[in-house]
Image (cartoon, rainbow, N blue to C red):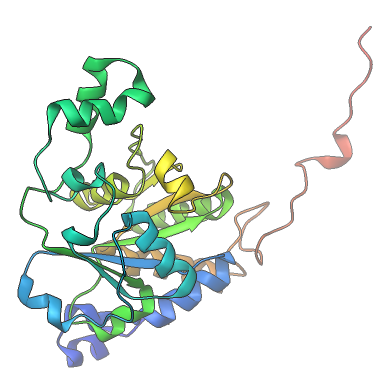
Length: 275
């Protein structure tokens, strides 16, 4: 599934050390994902922009989560420059502008109904340094086989049960016994992905008002973010478990997906009327 160490050294590039198509196919099949995993790359060198394999361009300004919805649903490879971003809450998250106290406070009042807290919220979101990010490249994971560099973050939209397995494999791969996530009143996808990137750790968020309506993070889905540099190890951990029998951790584990959903001690699971 993943390229061997010898083959990777022959290729010479860190990004070619993994076969992203094989990784994508493995994750989709083993977890029965509804959507493509999407690689996100924060472009800091403008010289890189012309080398990016883009399949479509946005005709009008749209939100970051709408760009990602097109990637995971239509398999588009897209480039989002600041002038194509619609959502004002995402602008400071990506360092496309400084925070503006009055305007950004008002944008958070409907969530928190407290002016002091509504100003504190955008200040405490994960953000990139102003001016560092020139554009954001987003594409289904296998598109990164054609790039000289890998994704900074890999984004999944999945149900909680699928997320549970992704995080278990992530923890096993990274030798982590637990994980903490970063929830904000909005900016679930934009700040959620930047928080994962800045902190070099996995993250999960619910939908926010914007990603529910624009990004189509439906009520039964969650947003999952895995640092790109950790994705190969996570996929390798999953593959190791699958080789033992299957991806599911239900029951004794190592069972085909989704596993047998049976109550523990089921024959003894009885209730009697209270005396």
